[in-house]
Image (spheres, rainbow, N blue to C red):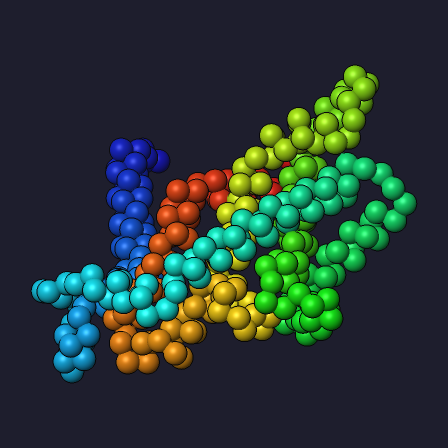
Length: 290
């Protein structure tokens, strides 16, 4: 029998690992260019002058004379600042109310024992299969009958709960050992105190994830704000983009339109970049059980 050349095998394994790593990085680099190119094109267009943009028969991937005039036009052609403030109010208020609802609901489903709990949870999960578009008419009729159109309350109420976030938080709560709960009850700790002093601090990554995802969802909300508001005083940025396109300068002045989109997108981009690790950590904690 011939001896095995372990050194040659190890060298061959290292070569394969390097080849796989190179192919992986090349693929990721190409994919990153594909994903980021729309953002680059949006930013590039926003700093081109109106005349320079319209004179390009063949689109250029650079500009030698960038300008910030489009950003000034974005705030003067329409009340973009008011749209941003309205959206911030909507996002913060909706997220705060939703956190209160889902925390209590997830705690009840994860820790408390009551008759019909499993049935309630199954009904909750079944609601996830119903598209939001199917209930939007019912919500519209309800909000209209309550005379809440063109109000922040009418914008916020249909979004103060989420079955998916309740499920995600419930799974996270169930990972906390039961012994902590029983020990707290022996010490005379109430359920609410145990929730706020023990469960919420342990589940902080998931709560941060839910908060960020909800803020992004509110910021990008389009159908419901467009349907329930026709007063410009309550327009969100999603309505504002449509208003710019229809009554502002969007159909003609594309660079100014892109400048408005950049301004609207910057808060979400910063939010995601700052908390991206928390988002991944929270999703992974909520999706695993052990």
